[in-house]
Length: 179
Image 1 (cartoon, helix red, strand yellow):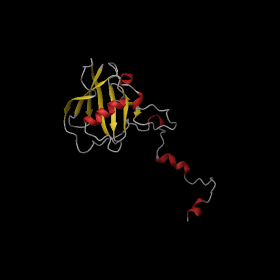
Image 2: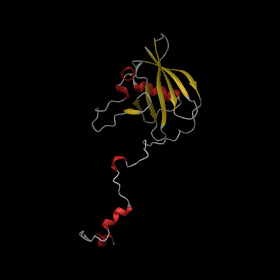
Image 3: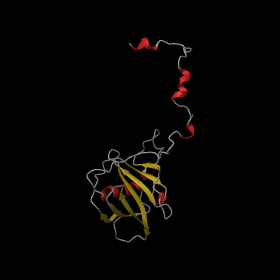
Image 4: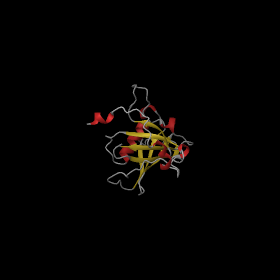
């Protein structure tokens, strides 16, 4: 079977590539197809991230084993596309070049029969020009109106008056060591 992906650059403009690749190819093969389709040189580190239906990032699948114990961490070459993606799990995030953070939303659009004589992977369609620089990312956690949440202790500046004038602590003489 052939997996057909739409790979969308996370940017304001519509920039995407449609890529066909065999289901038993690896995530590393998809990585190669993506950087080639978008005109990168392939010299930078990249990772895929599993995600939920609303593109919330989950587990990282790196290009190289970066774990403390060699061989313990699975990499892109360890996963066939069909291990990660199917008709129920269609989305994955791809990040290329961790300095510039080129981020792509990769969605499985179709699963079709393989056509004999067609070389895979193949870029089927290309839309939009790549910008010179990646879109700046803001990595912020969702903040609630009450930033202290359950840790609010209801103390304010007036409550700290109870510590004024209390000389019962031992002076360790740290001031003299800072000269």
